[in-house]
Image (cartoon, rainbow, N blue to C red; front, side, top):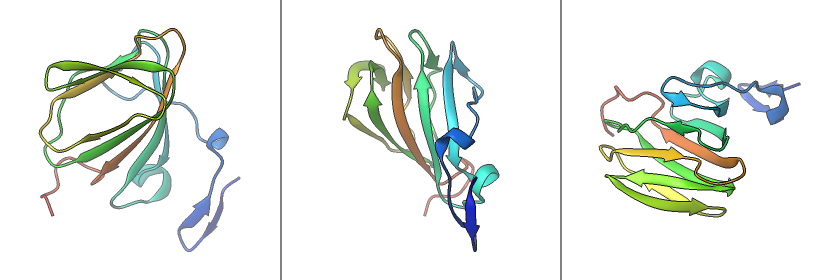
Length: 127
């Protein structure tokens, strides 16, 4: 169980259920580890994702949000501005606001990656 001290906490990822967020398909699952609803964070959305083979998130872009993807295991395709790139273990992807992107598991095993997004909503004004 999470131990909380003044809003700070330590939580094991096994305590957080898998979710399939909107516009994620085919077994594109994420654990929302730190976000407003799960941790009361104000500036960071941090999750671990596991996409089964053929799972994907629909092509999209963010108005003000920046994202970092860090691939932990597996391989897949990261589409950035209409161009596909193979991504695999230890690849780090930075996506500034306005860049259209999508990620899919084109590999043979689960694609596992971390996603850090800031700010937490896409309707905030840029800093």
